[in-house]
Amino acid sequence: MNGAQSLIQTLVNGGVSVCFTNPGTSEMAFVAAVDRVPGMRTILALFEGVATGAADGYARMTGVPACTLLHLGPGLGNGIANLHNARRAHSPLINIVGEHATWHQKYDAPLASDIHALAGNVSGWIGTCTTPHGVPRDAVNALIAARRPPGQVATVIFPGDCMWTESSSPLPAPDLIPPAHVDPATIDHVAVMLRQAQARGEPTALYAGGPAWTAHGQELVSRIGQAVGARVFGHRFSPRGARGVGIAQLTRLAYPIPQAQKQLEGIKHLVMVGVTRPVGFFGYPNLPSELQPADCAMHTLAALNEDVIGALEALADALHAPRTVANRNSFVAPDLPTGDLTIEKIWLSLAAQLPEGAVISDEALTSSLASDDWMSAAAPHDWLAVTGGSIGQGMPVATGAAVACPGRKIINMQADGSAMYTIQSLWTQAREQLDVITVVFNNRKYAILQSEMKAIGLEVGPKAHDMLRLDSPTLDFVSLARGMGVPASRATTQDEFNRALAIGLHETGPRLIEVLT
Image 1 (cartoon, rainbow, N blue to C red):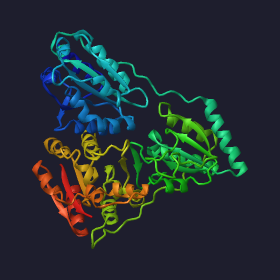
Image 2: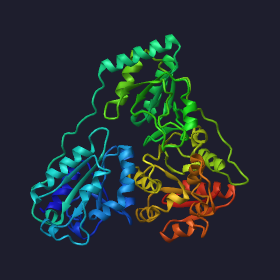
Image 3: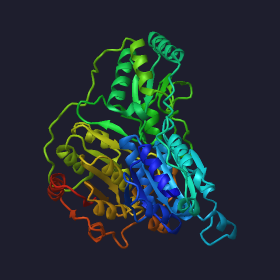
Image 4: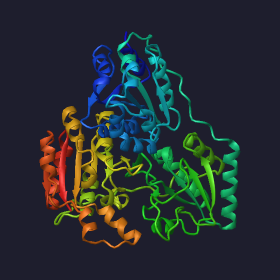
């Protein structure tokens, strides 16, 4: 058994059954080995950023790693933007990066690079294989590292000769590191602080994300808030959240700093659960970086590497929190909107037709800022948010979610500019016949950058304006999708969108709807 075969079998033993690939010459031993080792599904991507983003989406929906197969440093470099998002999402993910054969590295061949330095920007753990017999142990170390709470990117660099040479036998699944228990003294401290603040009339708030963004987590946070009269907020960029009817949905902190400051105005104590302190996405002139009031005391109930749900349950018990939540998303049967096509009507149409258990991959950016309001009365669904801000996430994350959840409808709400970063995702969706509906908001501009220019207070001259336009020429997403094997249509009225969405929800397989907004 050569190194590649031992690697794949060790990964399969450890629960890794999907590899998103874009291989090159140095990875050919791995490519050959997948036919000799059962249990590993390989999915080809035409760009490494699709492979890494898909692995992120897969991990968000399953909680277990997929692996990627990337070609040397340039291949890893092409995948780094979505690895940045995966790092921010704390997704367990294993990168397998090929390297030149050990004896060839000293010759500085054209594709030689410092792979370790590239990986260091996005990886929580990096390993470099040095001998063929060390391959299975390196694979086990990567498995343990990727699953270390709260999850992280693990990158293993494998020289070609370590892959094609005789290796050691595969290793069994390793023991994994569980989340750390929160110190009971911390829970007692937070409980006492909340009760004392309530007695003194000091406004308090809970700020939650990560595992606290599940349906159960939001329920617990809401119960605690009710018990002590605290406001409750969610982290806008949590990787996966539950939304829809019956959910005790937390209000997310707004993206614009002034709006977020208004939400937290007057708060004297902020309890963080599965998040760090809230900060602005960017720095702006005359605006603070931290969103909480200057005199607000900060308290951490549970960090992301700790048992967040267990800590919330213990705090709810300590506070004798009510067993039921007063405020849940209630069902309001919306009528299908008609007439002119607007962003709000598109979301309301989706809310009206959404099947229960759907998954929404949101990278609509400016077109989704009010989506919480529009989707709260929809059928229960999962929401995959932008995490690291590196655009080009929506399509690949939807692709990975579809691989992870073949029985669920995946809907990608996608901005036009960021779609072009990873448009190759459509080809993979067609090749694998993944059940993904992509809705592209084609406003023919980088709308979010236009907003950022105004927020900074900069004047937009003709050259600057031209750099933020996408209408010369206008992108034709219907033609782009059909060219990659995905059925597509364009909606210019609300009725046309309603019909196209109904078809996509009724049928299986990939479909794209372009909306001109």
